[in-house]
Amino acid sequence: MDSLVMANLSQRPVRTIISAVGVALGIVLVILMVGLSHGMLQEQGRRNSNVGAEILFTRPNNYGPGTSSVLSLPVQYAPEISKVSGVQAVSPIGQYLKPSNQSFGMEMVEGVDIESYQKVTNLSISEGKNLTTDDEVIIDPVYSRDKKVKVGDSIDLFGHKFYVSGIYQPEIGARMKIKLSMMQNLLGSKDRCSFVFVKCKPKYSQEQVAENILTALPDNKVLFTREIQELYEKGLPVVNVFVKAVVVVSIIISVLVIMLAMYTTIIERTREIGVLKSLGASKQFIVFEIEKEALLISVLGTLLGYLVAITGRWLIIKNTSLIIELEPKWLFYAALVGILSGLLGALYPALRVANQDPVKALSYE
Amino acid sequence: MNKMKTILQTIDLKMIYQIGKIPVNALRGVNLTVNEGEFVAIMGPSGCGKSTMLHILGGMLKPSSGSVLIDGQDLSKMSDSSRTELRRQKIGFVFQKFNLFPTLTAEGNIRLAERIRANGNHKNEGERRTEILRLLNLEGRLNHKPLELSGGEQQRVAIARALVGHPAIVLADEPTGNLDSENSQVVLKMLQELNKKFGQTIIMITHSPEAAGITQRIVQMRDGQIVK
Ligand SMILES: Nc1ncnc2c1ncn2[C@@H]1O[C@H](COP(=O)(O)OP(=O)(O)O)[C@@H](O)[C@H]1O
Ligand SMILES: [Mg+2]
Image (cartoon, rainbow over all chains, first blue to last red; front, side, top):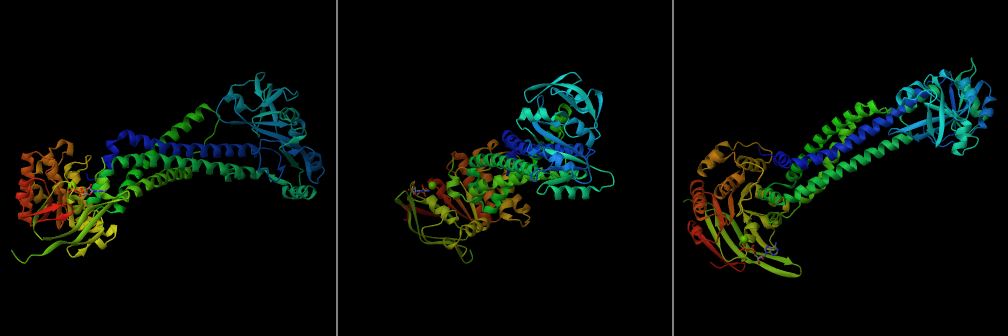
């Protein structure tokens, strides 16, 4: 064995493990956060494409359901849209994303005008009664099962107690629905909603109706519900920014951890570097040896990260209502993040010692 | 002996260290010529510039002025990386403190040197290595790490390492300075044998007249200059 790299790694197991854990942290962060945001999006997309309504009408800066937590669209648009030719029914919806009461994550609540909502969707009540009073909430079977909530139980929303009046089917939009007027009151957004669902008359093409709507109400935005799923899968701008931020944070963590680890051990080994130089080792040789060490730590960290991320995902899915996608593409990117940042982190300490004065290095105690 | 070949020559070599604003004249014009196959001892009081000179001869330091010719090449005009390259090909260092890699075995230390000296080219050093190890009496100790070896054994491993890749010159800075007299004698005997058997050129700094006594020539330094 002539490898200083292996010798150094096994000589200092604690340092090796701590550095690998640092890299693993970045890997886990990337895999879980990206998986989580993509998983939630796909789930959202699926649930939103389940609606009977064909068209979703909203403001131009709104990318679709679940992306805004303020009610910004005046409900006055609804009657205007219903006058457009080819429109059979309309219903204004308020959506609000709030931190979950019980588990880590976000939960969506919808405010609906239940009479018109049932005209644009195929929602029906499968158990209990429909939404009638301001203090009632209807939930879907998944929520009922996951959160162990039955008809007659109460749920706290916006600091207000709501009673579950019934369970609805199929899974559409948010899992909890309250009256829109109540949501407007609680959020202080009188006469506002997030978007309007539009159901087309038979024999009218969706494209035609959409065009009619935009002609009547220009400078707005329409989405086809059949495309929402795809839209979500492509990733929304907000989410893409989030993903980028996660990747950048992971890179920074890994770079710093490796840099620190390499820096301290290299300083300890200053004298050894001097000896390498006395033997005629070039700067490239020294940088290469140090990078090899960093590479090994990064690979170790990446594998550890995979292990933790996969176990973590399993535990999270088992214990919460969160959905985490495990995409091969992102497993690959995560490894790339871990390994590249390892190499990058080692570069500065490596260059620094490689350029050191050999005589001074030799006299280092 | 056939015709003497000059392997090393310094011309008016000067070295001035700068400590803050104060210049320290470590070498004040050293002229030294060493022939191939010579075993030279450098002696002189502490601080007279011996180590500084040895470092310059090995290309570890750039002199302030003057020149150093190693095998005809002028070190003092070279870039840092060319000096490193020359050191890789022509110089073997032996230090007072052995300076073995503590995490590697004796064999690992020697193989690492082989890897550096081969610089990517695969040379079979096997035969020469066996011969050297036999001469240094290290064959049984190769799987031990430095801390498991005696000082004498460590220094012998360090010598074996310095010899990897046929250096033209071995530069030894007080190689017996950290050894008891018994181990010193063994190491000195081996250096002498290397010089005789392989014709290895050796320049050795020493404080001990006994060590200097085994060499063919003693160079005395005082205050940055050669006096004899
Ligand atoms: N890196 C340095 N910086 C400043 N002065 C130095 C340095 N190295 C050596 N010196 C000085 O140069 C002189 C010669 O030192 P050195 O070559 O180590 O002598 P020797 O090996 O003969 O004891 C001494 O005065 C020493 O203090
Ligand atoms: Mg000295």
